[in-house]
Length: 123
Image (tube, rainbow, N blue to C red; front, top):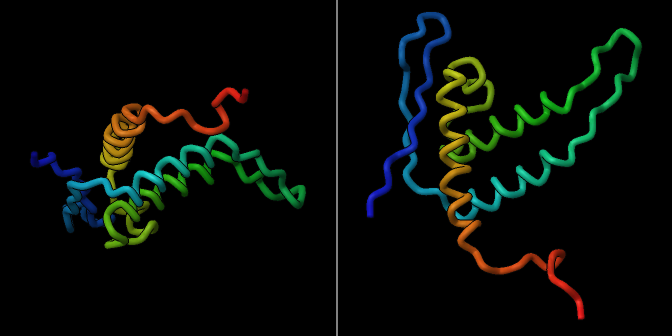
């Protein structure tokens, strides 16, 4: 069974012409673990307070976006940087990549009948 590739195009920020298209067909177990760990981490990020009155507070959402971008970079084998992704990718393509990773990973995780230790009843 040949899976449909997950694609991402990076564009030239000045001309908006496509520079390079990246493809990945396989979600490895390492990527699955990274996605699950990221999902757990994102659910526990507290909002940080600002140190000085003139600073804007560091929002949890900014940290979450950065973590998601790092996951996308890692998924494509670190062939580009987070900054290149931030300045050269269309947000809808990034979201499609993330949704596809989550969808494919979700089918694997939901098919696992093992009950996590913290949810098991003790006798």
